[in-house]
Image 1 (tube, rainbow over the protein chains, first blue to last red):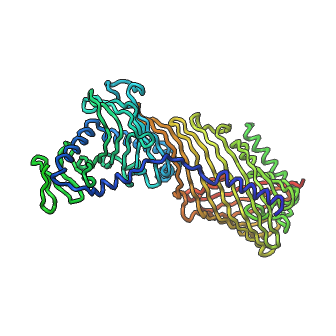
Image 2 (spheres, one colour):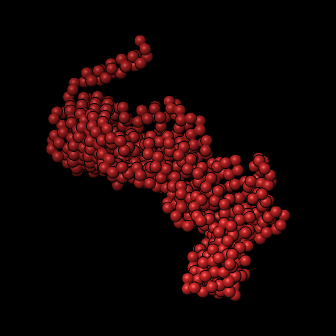
Image 3 (cartoon, rainbow over the protein chains, first blue to last red):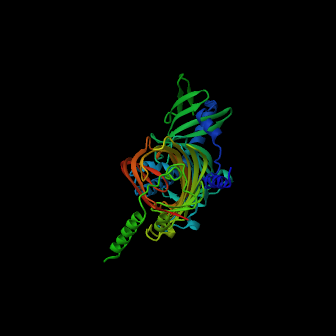
Length: 281
Length: 279
């Protein structure tokens, strides 16, 4: 190759290296919720009269705490508000496009990425200006892929104070450190466009808290369900797990277990399996 | 007389003078041929000064150039080079590249607003092959790839990021020289691909208590408009110094410089004028 050819070739190579590729995104690694998801999907424990009473009581207590602290609703509201704002920002950028086809530009902003949501909690007072030190914070991480939201959203609380149903709530740091104080499995089917009130979330919480004036352990997992609104709670029994389904008014309606699928009547305090066997609780 | 009229008169006088000061001998010879979209380089020790670019034939087969129009209009430093790597008559092959840079902070004639800032880096890579079929007929073909990287910031929402687009097109030109001073050219170009990728970083408020910071990257083929093409017949007139090429065709519009093809089709004009001097 001539000297001039070498110069041209080197120029092309350097230029291509300069502009040929995008910088990668360094996404934080989410906590692994695979095992917990599997335990909800396929509970192996035996639901019988020997465990039913304690299991239902334990499950109901978890649902009561979850409703009292409103964690699923608040998490969903924070995510929805953030995603709505991102949609609006994106629309604002793309509306000025000469192409007039905003969908094409919008596609640019979807792909590999990560979002860090920082929220100053509502505080115990009414209509006060946001104050991070007084009200505490909630921080969430949402990873994005070309398909949409990563299945796991996780985050931390720092003395997060708010009122739920008129009662003072404070959520404090847990022991999860890099795994997060709260972890939410939302599955593979959501994007920032379609995530909303109808999105089920499996929550794994590892926090301390205060409800009213009383200390509270917030270390449990629970699945918040959309229409009809309710919760599923995993309760450990001797030989595995059983999953109890409650309505939003804490009424037990169903139990899934290794020995069958039970429909429950909370007023009569008994569950009936498809084979006709009855388990009182 | 207004300054615009004076400028127009000066240009007209210059064009007429340069045209008439030399006999219209015709300037398409076997050694001196169409250099746009072909494998041919500017002749050694010649300077081409024109609307779309100024080129200097440093040595035989090696040309460097720049666009003063780009410097003046966009305050954009730019340089390009073309090297003839093969000349086995009737076959010629050349390679070309260049680099252009635009910084919106440097713009004198355009205002992008105080809130926005962008820097654009453009690097083309070109391969041309020319075949002289006969004394009057030639065929030029080539592959042109253009890399464009845009770094930008849009301040109201603290959005910043980088955009990368890469496009490749095939070009072909059929040249017919009925006279020494005139060539008739039929240019066709076809987009092979056009990809766009982006990296965006932002820190935006959601409400008075919530903010979201993030980074995202994506590549899309949404701009890979299928069967984007253009066909432009043109006439190239050449005198000893003055060269004039003009034509009109039809096809997809394209943003010059970055060679970004647009989805709309319509009438595609072509105008270029340049003077060539021996050094």
